[in-house]
Image (cartoon, rainbow, N blue to C red; front, side):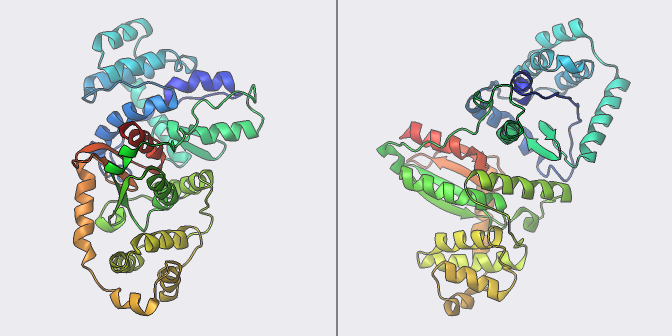
Length: 384
């Protein structure tokens, strides 16, 4: 998707674009590589129209032989050819068009195996030096912009610097609006919201998700899961640093802030889920969950301490003397595991994730990320 907008970026902004080919990775930055491969393909087809690009609704990932050929062609291109020939290569790859890709290879040539290794190594080293780990990334003057869903941040930055050739032109890839008009049928739909008390992205998505549920009338069901690191999913320092930075940037876009946070890892999560289950029985589950997220990620409250947890309970409108009696109630663990299994069932392994169900409980949509909320809203509107 990002390769399709290179020409538009160069036309609209006074910047040079330097492309680096990087190898596919299977390391701790990609804890579920097979799920990622599947999700990245079918989700790209879902979101592409919202960003003004295209992606084939392919039922299978391209074979390794086709990916290798595409890599050899790309590694043989000059910098000025990526926004034209590179787009053709990408289209053939994701359509599974062997003949089309072979024709491009015959016309433009392919790099040798040694040349491919050299270019991939150089790309990986450059990316590592700039402190990232993924592909489809733009780097500009100290900041990373991952994928087409973060391109609008880069565009807004370039416009603020006076780099737009025409300041009146709209953004190339703005964040799609979250629709606010729904029919009465939305009340028959169920939106499952998979969340974690340790997730800054959950904190970013919290208010917008609750606002969507209120505006549409959809039945919102909160499904908490254990944080990735607490269920044995590896996480690197590099990945964590990018996530914290990106979340703060996303929070500002939603009119919130994450400039003060205190990571609630370990006991705060256990205590938090214990109190959440008790609060839910008293109709205060959502109040407590939201209060915890705000305290940890916006107010910098140390939820490792009893005094910090007491502040969260007070914000939620609950009594601490009653809440502390439930600090060691571990009966929430079975439900959290059921929620994790359900989340993996539709191809996601992280939060926040959304699953939209029809009146019969059949899945309509399953997506991961607060930056997919516009797609959730769009689907609710279409089904209502």
